[in-house]
Amino acid sequence: MTALHRTPGAAVNEALHIRRLSEADAERFAALRRAVTTDNPIPMGLSLEEELARPIEGFRAQLAYPEPNAAFGAFLQDELLGCAAVAWPSKLPSSRHKTNLWGVFVAPGARGRGIGRTLVQHALAHAFGHGVRRVNLLVYLPNEPAVCLYRSLGFEPCGREPEAVRLAGVYHDGLHMSLANHAA
Image (cartoon, rainbow, N blue to C red; front, side, top):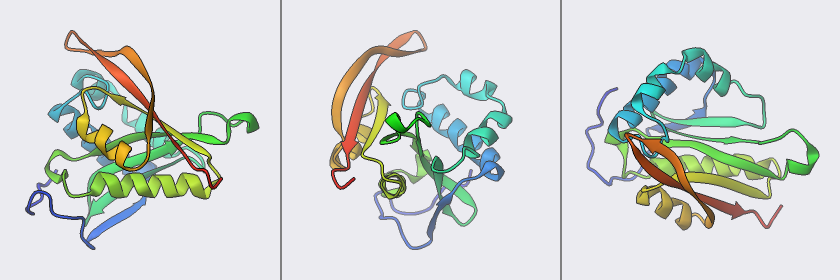
């Protein structure tokens, strides 16, 4: 992964391109996940060993989930810098009013530039465009930057899962958050 040579904290510029990811992006998606997990496995909720053991076919299948499910990527030229996705937990009409925001991560060298915010807003617009009333997510703790981002976008904590993951012998809680779309 190429490092960005821009000032930390610089805003997202017009060279950044957001598009839906497909199974053809699986290798870049996997490489970005591995870079993020190497930097800090807690936000990903799994160890680097677990991440490395995941087959590329699984990523291809994940990125090929049918509409309205969607994963979005932020690209600078051909480099994938970040992702955010939404997935409907059920095909049943009784649960189609809600979706899960997942897979929100940004390359370590590209953080602090608004890429995560841009991707989450893009994923939320997609979900709301499909009539979603509520978007839910889970953040493994500690991850103050993510919690601050989600709060700034209107997400509210709605529960805490004790000992949600165990990494390197240490348990980490999960914070459940939810955002209501009152226009739906």
